[in-house]
Image (cartoon, rainbow, N blue to C red; front, side, top):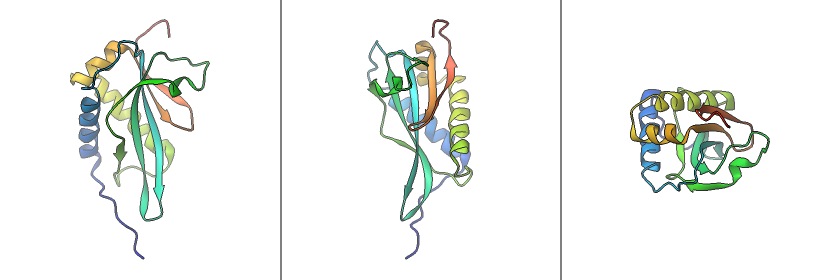
Length: 143
């Protein structure tokens, strides 16, 4: 039986889709207690398609580098999970993380509405659900 091919898009188109997904996610009411946005990444695999990466956007009250489970206590959830499907991304987790972080840095430097919201909160992180979470933006000196 042939493998089912998942629609994959060029990297530039994927970046635009990712930016739109963040904007859509941040149109939802964000609780005032959100003190950090976390992009939780996953490696996705199934028997009938190639692997790819996906992401959820969560808002948490605080970032605590001493507590490895801080991101489990979220109080905001963005739009449905975003799929990073592109033949331009290598299928190892390091490549997936790098692409997500690069996209996030570019997004945060933009004038998009969601980027302004994230900068106002001050801390943005990204990492795999079963791994380390890395800070992408920290504009809070007390964190």
